[in-house]
Length: 184
Image: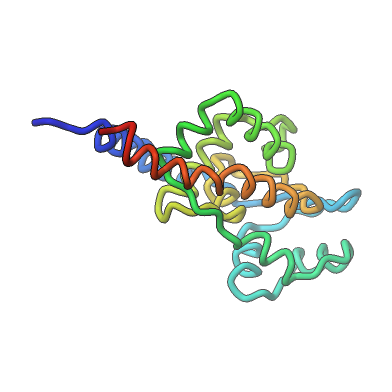
């Protein structure tokens, strides 16, 4: 039986994403400590999911957004706007030196309580977020992050989304090159 390099790499990534997806479901962020400057409040991830779905904050999230003078619609958009990605190209990109730099930048906004961003955990969360639909949202990254608690700097979320989009969106053009030229 002959496998193309594309089929083999796609299969390996699919297995890895499935494994990582299983891990992130077992150990996934349930509580987000959301910060806006000096304001900080633990928020169940279900409150962020509700905001993403309905546009209406509730509970501690509503209180925090009011205190931080944040518009719920703007936060909803930042959480749910997606970046299209090719899983193979994404994996290759995140496992490169520039990819590690990107992970470090995102890790300044989204990281575990220890205060230090784990590249492997963030890489896992991003791949896991993209594995089901070849798109990434910041909410999906938070949902897939393999720790029960996560620190998210709300005041930097929009900048992080913009940086992620600016870096990952052009990679879509590379996906065509990989599909057509390199793996033949």
